[in-house]
Image (cartoon, rainbow, N blue to C red; front, top):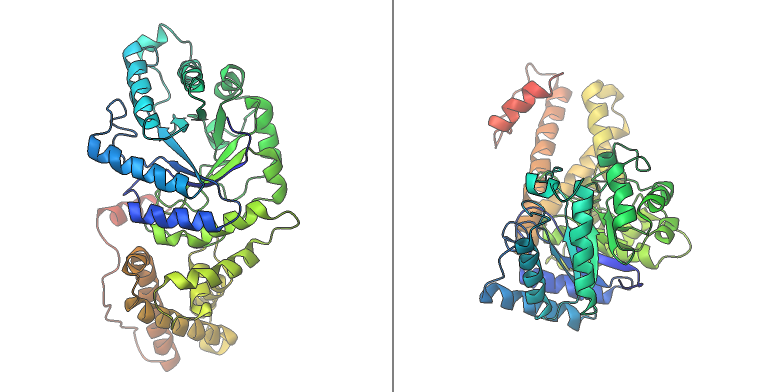
Length: 431
């Protein structure tokens, strides 16, 4: 295992994997930024990475992967290939071991020397056959992982392990008392890296104390698999905000940080750029300032020179991080809340704020419609246009309220969300 602090990007989400050209753009970004040194390939929907893990890549797919590894190395970045056998592996099977070894050999032959074995999001019970050999799933996973680590050591290759219990919530917020983590800490070779997402699957904050506690159990510094900007669990969200909720002192407790960000590639400039800023910062960390600084760079990728910095920052503020809005996003929500709950005479400056932000949002949308970066537009389109439609509805409501006319009537351009999901939600979440 390399002693160098690992930092970079983890393509580990569910959904359509990034395209090759997008990954090349990512490698260029990472090379340009101080602090970034690693890319991990682990898209859940690469069939040969997860579902068909026993099968070697066909020649065409293998050639594409080889070119990707070479492109990454040409940018002086480490490339980690992750394999996810946990859905159906028989840990005691020599046949499955041979399949795992053969797969690793195939990837080694195209230039990869860094690997990860992932047991996240899998059944927590072992098969009847494995129960004859192992007393627990942790014992079974430690056996296979240690065996793979020892095999890779013959080729000077490293290994990182992702546990089935990979956050505090999965340990029922009792990391010191969790049997799985304790057994892993004792059984797993100390040279193997260990992934952890923090207190939650998506951790808005990762307290230093929580990692210090974990270290005592797993007997090593963990590598954060950071889902702060991940959105594969809710495809109607997108996050443009900065790396936040982690103090600089946290780095002292870690062996690395890999961000597993938005599925939409072009949404990830700020999340990844500000992570790079965080990694090299030594004195104090101001995530808001990092967002403002990064947004100035972000502008160049929109494909329209008429866009203003204020419009770009408004976009980021409206879709910031999980559970958090940026400054202008909060202003917009508070303005709507005030306007909807009070009479027009009491709206005060809230109406002016709403109108200003509405104008900026409309301008942003119009300019994006003619952007030359169509991929970026299509990444942003669903969430941005839904917000625009809600703003239009709100604007019509304000005009009606100010007029003092009878019943509010509004001919919607697009029907509100409907269908089976929303019918179920109305029932389930009505209380």
